[in-house]
Length: 533
Image 1 (cartoon, rainbow, N blue to C red):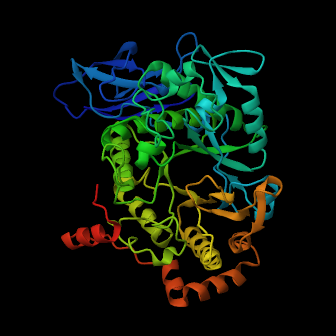
Image 2: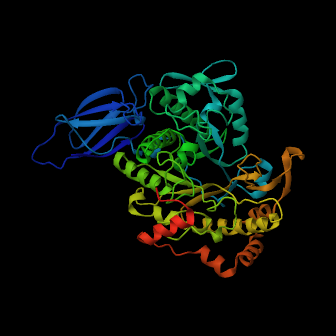
Image 3: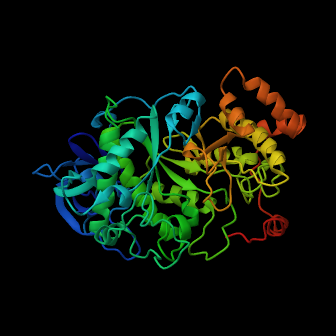
């Protein structure tokens, strides 16, 4: 006996059970409904228990509790018969499209181009999609008042700051469609460092004393933390996924940031990759379920760095490989109930300070490559096309949600600028050639003087200019030209700069699923000064 699938529509949760034992017929099944808390050693509370006749192998529960406040679609389930746990799916993994308020299809874009910029620059760039960041601690509060908006979820009141929501509304209005990046930052992205709020929503194992721990993982270990996370997600998605688009159109969400570097960007203390992905996948799934409640085509994404098969130096309990993270996510989702997740990748050059990614030494065209950068970004698509990663027979969708090309100051500045100009043309063409890529986001419009010494903008930072907007770099005009009638001019220039043969090969590289050899490991350790995690 096995749970094949758990589905939801507007009224019912349905459990599809396959009984392979013809001799011992099971007549009744017990369904325990549990809170979807997650984490090693975390015990879920039983919300309700039901004993139901198995019948023809499909049993149902009403989706909403008698009072209508509680939605069982987001719960975890444990089924048993004759005192034995029935293996298989544990969560709703299929939601009827008609169960959503907004049933519009996922949009088809004229261009995959995107940039974090002012509305005026977006218009000049002909950008259709945005990728705004929003942090739980930056828009929520525990103190109600005239300056807050009350949101009720599962019978509990949560409070959102009016000023933060109005600012975000203005930001959202600049884009036709948005994929949100959902963060949990205790001290940035508008956080007021409200202790009561942080005590509830910051991960219990967050290393607050570590200055490198910039963002926390979401807290799904406690029901209080889970409630804040779910309210954060649901408030945003209900507001920004209306079919009339009154406040903007959200079509997806990236959960956290660069979680293979969780010690910095999604800190949950010391955890194995398997345990971390266990909690992280629960946050992804919950966001997906909430999203599909409002928009039938909503997508969620795992956020990863360019460290494909090597981890950032440091503790193996805080730094993983992107390959291991995405593989563990696939295994876990197949085991607990698959859902429609994708990958938000950051294919920066192997060394973020050098924009000539076509010279990357640790970016190969096979599944064992140490890094996936602009040079070999097609490896990611090929890897995700394997059977383990397919969702309903289709490959996972990809967005390149953060990337840029650095320009150094000093005597080589102009040389760096020309490399950036050529590089953005080639990188964009490569991403556009891929079959599963929906968005390519240039990280910044203006150089950020606080970004670890990097100058990743299309425009120079000028401390004395209005808005600190300085002179556009050559990359600015090249990126603007893509998907316009000026594109051929910039392609010709980039091809000449990089070299015609190399440029043409990198547009259509051959990907090889080669076996790893001891020589590969030795070469990679020499090239990267790292060992495989």
